[in-house]
Image 1 (cartoon, rainbow, N blue to C red):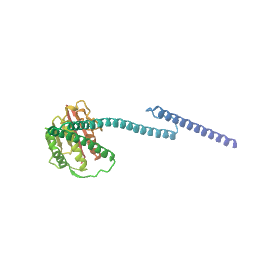
Image 2 (spheres, helix red, strand yellow):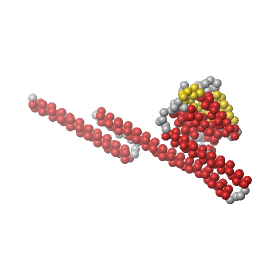
Image 3 (cartoon, rainbow, N blue to C red):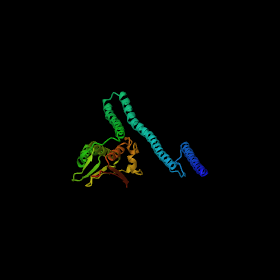
Image 4 (tube, rainbow, N blue to C red):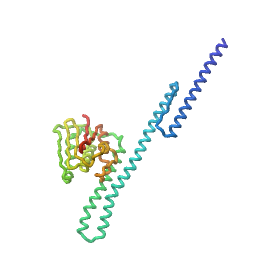
Length: 294
């Protein structure tokens, strides 16, 4: 009987020893795989053929963290590229009006002609206004993106009125540009729980975008279902993916007076309020559609 017990214990010990050795082997494989993945910077994941559920779970958890690590690395990389491009664009956009201002001030210092000086002043004022707009857009970017997780204050807004007010505010600019404006706003009140400041900014940026890119026309529509549509011909955007216009700091050469933040901020503010924004560029016509579910 004692011999039988000894044999059973020996078998159990042997099984446990083999189990420990197998676990050590699996742990070694995980360690080597993990080290290789980190050192070679590959997209591979840890492959585990072990029968032990805990080791497979460990490998799965490590793979999950590796995926998160790669996502964060990609965000960091693309963020650096984006920041580099942004600095290049912003430097160019700020340098251009600043150089012009310095040049005209220099010419003013070299002339005693009142008429020439009077002619230079409006040009300097226009360039200074351009710089002011650029700095305001950059300030808007820092505010809007740094508060991405903040709670949105809402009220029951009548979109018809907010849209009409925004159009009236831009009417002089549109007229100065000689743009043909067509407005089709439903007579039914479209009421949504939204942020008034956000909506004013959205409409303002969309109108400003039309001033930059439109070939001379703009159609604005508020439909019975609440969809808001801005549409204009835009030959300068030929060959461009319409979705690119929502990228931060993306600019089109035809509109170099902009940081490219306008539509990016529009997208951010629409989505922050639970809305959806879509763009389409077909046959030289850009259409931007915004919808907020009732």
